Length: 527
Image 1 (cartoon, rainbow, N blue to C red):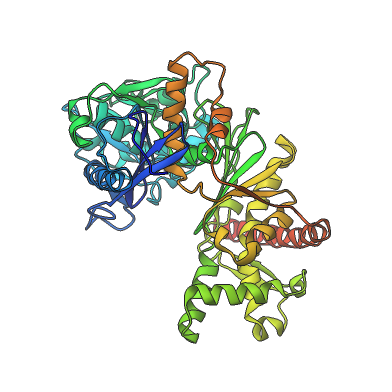
Image 2 (cartoon, rainbow, N blue to C red):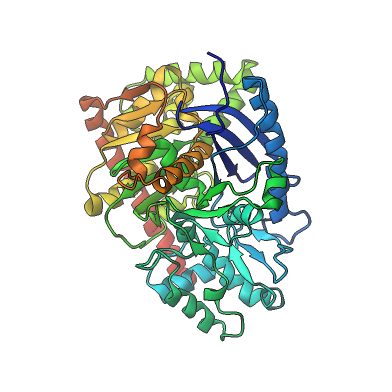
């Protein structure tokens, strides 16, 4: 059956680190009618000092307009019609990026990206001030850094926000944010679901109260289900002539949108297994962040969202495959499949060999400057390339389990894992089954449900329409599940393999503790 437009579709905008994707989602038929993409004009602002990673807000604005043009082309190809209107708009973006505006509503300054390495001393200071661990990549640490290092710039700032909020400002003129993205700015929100003014006051006092009070320039937090603003004339023009007045949902962070797109419920881990491994877990427990291993944020509906982010995901396996592919003259896919076959044929205990896969350091185990290391290796490591492949596929999930084990005493056992990302391409489901055996819970995936982050933004916009229509009994989680599409595949843990991987995990954990102890000793010796 050909796809048709009903004018009840949802436009969803996803601002990633390197470009923007937009989709047209039909909540009634649970399908996408088209996709449009556009890269930013620059990956980062050129010629900045070392250690600065920034983008201009207009990179996102211009890419949004270009992506919308490409969406219109794709939708017309799929339906035979152009987009004349939509029922609602959802917006999501990469988190933590510090966006500032001035009194003329312009955004002339560079925006510190989530991966900008500044903010480390400020994050430690804020953790002490607030009695809550605040990662260096979070917006608050960069705000405090900017106040101290560029006071002339900060004295002109009349608003601070993040990527998704900046785009909604472009479309509506409103300075707002969703609870999840707000928690990635300043940590846990206050009892009213707003940014905690006591936290803001402590930053003001720390910098001598010489700037506009932060409470006057932070965005208003809009919970899921409420309208953040309506499309104005400027926004309508950016989106190619859509009518003004279209309601726009609260802008949210990409991690919250991934969680919604996966339709994860309490004790269900939404695991994105790609270059990095990121696991997001909704919880009704009220927890406070204590270390870098577990980040504590909010979901769009103000539940707790626990995030474990392992920097070293499939990147090791991908590089290993690439090297052997170039050496043998075979394609990446053929090489990956052959290595997977060899890995699957190994003894379950991998000859007792262990890999700490910290090629780029690993904040999830509080070893940011660590390097990778192999332990208990025998001649098999040299004789069979499948052994290294097995270790590279296994070890990132071991890191994820390390974070889960820190949570287990506080929230209980996981029920299941909802898997997305490149690991799903593993031959014969080898990697998903490996994860099920390592984590000891079923791993599920929905094929044909790959829109991911943008789909999560679309679901939040559709949920807003439900709430505004009076359907107040529906929760975000239940509505997200109703939007799930595709056939679900499940990999159940093998009890015998679970016992073997329990033993391997405890050896892995012991190696981490030894590395942490050595690092602490070196720190103490240098002081």
